[in-house]
Amino acid sequence: MVVPVDLHLDVSGVCCPIPLIQMGKAMQELKPGQTLQIIGNDPIFETAVKDFCHANGHTLLETRPGDNYSITMLIKVGG
Image 1 (cartoon, rainbow, N blue to C red):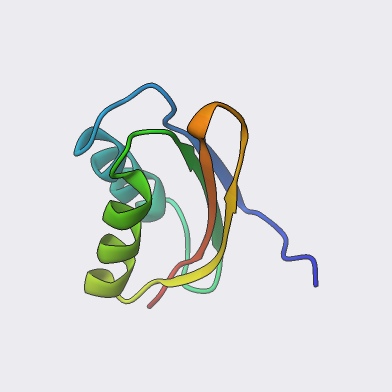
Image 2 (cartoon, one colour):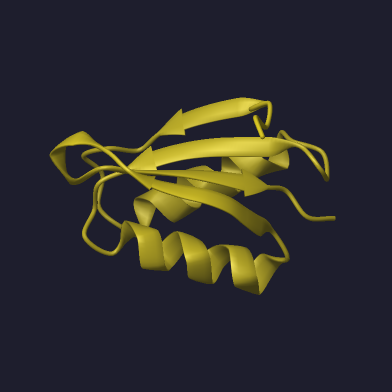
């Protein structure tokens, strides 16, 4: 199933917590049910995003490993 992406955010090369701050700001632009694709490569990026989603009512739809230790995550914005 292909899920349309409403907003792309690349935080590669940036260390946590900055990716979470940028992700929070990006999610404010989206409505509940829309999707954010975020790409990062900080060693704690994946865990931090999962925790952020759980704490804020968002749904993690997909996680994919990429090149250069990057992780691509697809998140459905909660409401």
